Length: 233
Image (cartoon, rainbow, N blue to C red; front, side, top):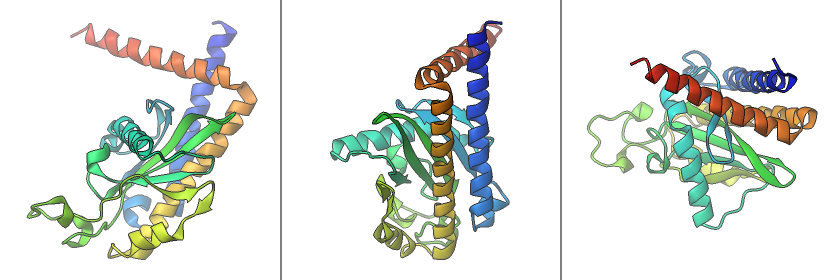
């Protein structure tokens, strides 16, 4: 096997180790048993086009909407002329912007290299309460989304690394278990931040060109595996 091929496989394996470290970080830091016991959260690294590169074992509906959520969030920020900077952390749960239901909150962080966004680290998790007319934010008799809980468009919880306590205050004021919510949201932030650190370490070790080459190879490999399987039907 060519050395370049071995290097690509090693890079992908290392990227996969990053998302598993993200998952362990979130699990250990989270407050609510939904995170720490039930594992109702998912971690991923997506590229700058929102394409899923690697993912941890998690909730498949979460991972299935990573692509739509990231792209919808980026489209929203572009439309509102909101720039992304190093150290920014975005929070969003709007189901009309690629999300699932309101309790599933996505935390997203851009990963820069030479002033360009190359990847995003992402953690989507199910929170114990997101407001609305019923505890736990499940109400089968809801007639409109406003009864289901607080709806969060893409907002910066951190900007250039600076924590926006006013965004957190606004969110915790609208949920029944603010301490759980804050603890779990900050656990998600810890997850995306550890991924940013680890991906930058890989870029420094292997070079951005080799990282991108491994990503493209992995996409092609996945496409080939799927097409080969479909051909057997």
